[in-house]
Length: 326
Image (cartoon, rainbow, N blue to C red; front, side, top):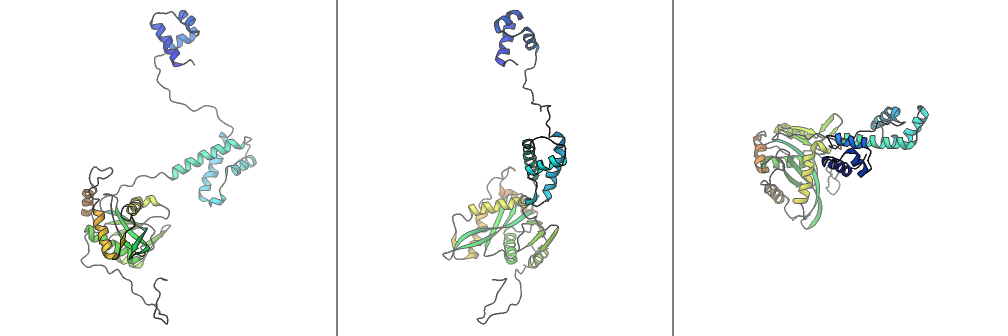
């Protein structure tokens, strides 16, 4: 194939009245080629097409793909490597090709499988739905640096979230964090998705086990609870992003305070200062969308829920008792 500038030159000479023989003498291009490019009426770029030439591995690719597919359900230390697949091909099939073709195909198929595993549809959240999780931060409490945990409750519809700081991740902390957030927004979300926080409950396969105190609070307030699968951050991606945002904006630089209760009240008010920020895709402020979140929840119960557990513990000779192993 000749170059596009040469094609343009041939067509230009023809437009100026030169005969094909004259164009041949001028350019050295054969007359059949000149006639071909003068007759062409479409020079649009052509879509690339795959080569029709196959490889020796083509008849055996189903065998390789089946081995890789079965490996998804096998412990990673016992999955087939490309070398092991090649060894099996040469031993179990008539394949006589080299290892390189097998290695390239295995690499391509594994990349496709990873892309398939990582593809998720974006979840659409209606007003009033929420997600909950914990994050860890360092604070200066009474002048001493202390590692503490903040309970985050996020509302995916409005992209708003609220948090409260605690010393632990117990059921009491979960219930207190929920109560504070419910009181601040003036209602109870109809459905909350939780991470596998021990204070609320956890999922193991299809089995969900709730903490007793949390179950009592859920029954008291009437909201539905769902628990994300382990290592499935996409199921509660909004609150995971909120946990990171809160760590960077609400706890950076390291906050210093003496009264945890007062600091938690300021946290709720401080988070509300971001309500004027536009939502990243809905064309309204997060505060305006939060009003729709507030309109959707259940009404709070008339009587507050007692966020305590009662139990007994034996004291040692010095009058000390252990609670939750502490």
